[in-house]
Each structure stands twice: as C-alpha cells, then as structure tokens.
Image (cartoon, rainbow, N blue to C red; front, side, top):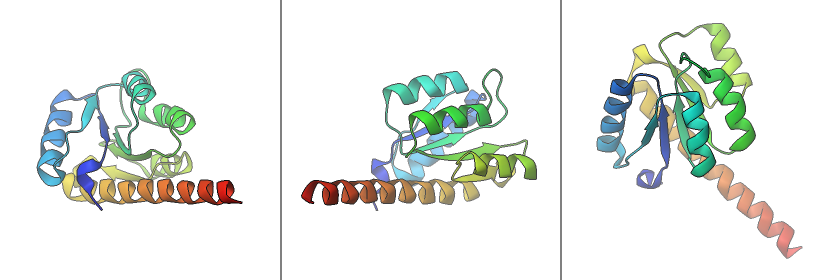
Length: 142
C-alpha cells in the first residue's frame, strides 16, 4: 500500500505539536499533512477536502475533539479518525470508540504508537473504499 498517497489532517490546538507531527510524518511517509487548530477549523477543512485519516486532539477550546468526531461521522463517514490526547481516560476511550474513532492514542506514547495507528486507519479507509466500489459494481452489473 502506497502511504505517500494518504491525505492526512492533524487537528490540535498546539501549533508547535502540529508542526512537529507533520514534519515527522513527512519524513516517515513522504506526505505533507494538513494541519489546523480547532474543531471548527477541522470541519471547514473536511467540507472542502477529502481526508483518509484525521488525527484529532480531544481537549481543545471551543468545539472539543469528541464533539468534532460526532460531526465528522456525519459529513465524512469513511474518513478514519485517530484520537490523540494528553488527557486520556477509560471513559473517554470508550466514548471515542462508540462514536466511531478508529483508535485512541495517548500523547505520552508519542509517534511510536501514533504512526502504526495512522497506517492501520489508512489501510481500513482504503479497504472500505474498495468494498464500496465492489458493491457499486455488483449493483451496476446486476
């Protein structure tokens, strides 16, 4: 699977963290992720662009990550979301997964845990795309 084709959005209210993650992911995968710093900004970007994977912080001023996730599921249901937080709890993990997050990664675990989750989310996104295409072709040829 060619990860260089991945369309990735990083959403975190800490611009420095977004910049570091974007640089490291560029080195790792050869991609240039988009970044933004609020849930509202993320929803605006998703309305204009198609993303395969979104890395989404939970604790942000304004629209928090969980509320952003709820809205993302409505407007971009195939996009995979990896929650990335420094304020983790079992309750939040269960809520994020119930809302449809691919996974939930604690910032303490860093890129070594986040990167494999981004890869897994991208593979799932592409598998869903292939499945939808196959179903559409079967419907069309019937």
